[in-house]
Length: 292
Image 1: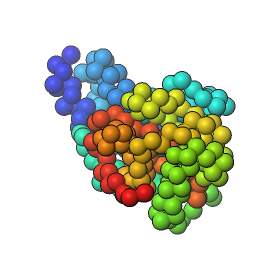
Image 2: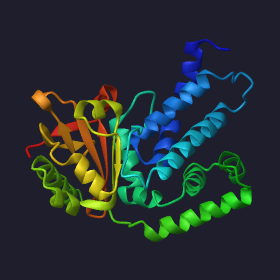
Image 3: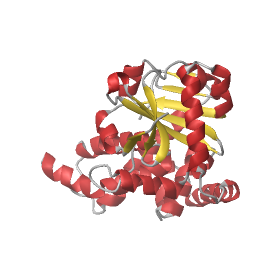
Image 4: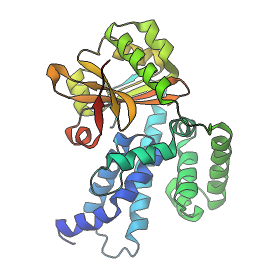
């Protein structure tokens, strides 16, 4: 097998594409990073010297990793709290590019991600791989273990739902900033009812292992009630921030930035919150602290 440096170089040539795919499939930059890392681990342990199309091979691997993550997410959806959950990133190069990620996030759109979350894992993969990345249906069929005809139907059904439910207007950043500011105030004062008013009924919160350890927060909670209970009273040392140009929250105990909250919206309500504390991920964000 090639030595580690050769393997790493071959993988880095494909990393940005894999990140973009994983982000589209998962809708979370932290989970996309996890999927790409798992793909690297599988690649580094496999003899691919006979693989003629390495890009296609890696696409298959990262897609299967994402499919497993989506299925796990779906199986936990009925649980109010879970003890484990992954963490973020798409990217445009061997290292994370905050500007590129902001562009990618705007291309996908908060509303689009909310719609994708309503699809089954197989529908989501079929739609994203074919409509966004042009992967042929016969190749997607092997990944999701369906026939090409069934795979085509899955993508078609997903396409109709996306086209019928995705608003074409840009998100209102001012209203989102007001919502995040109100969320911060309610979390600081442990105002449970106020938090519920700001959250989508199906809202979820996820923390990477660093953020969970620092904040004592469970890694995942789903549903507005569970999210409000998890975060009420946990805003000590938090400040309003712009994270890659979008409203968010920075956590600064002792005036040292230790983590951020990244928000996803469904209309005017908060649909998802990602708590990120992993140092490399924090360093990749463009974070501007604001007066709150």
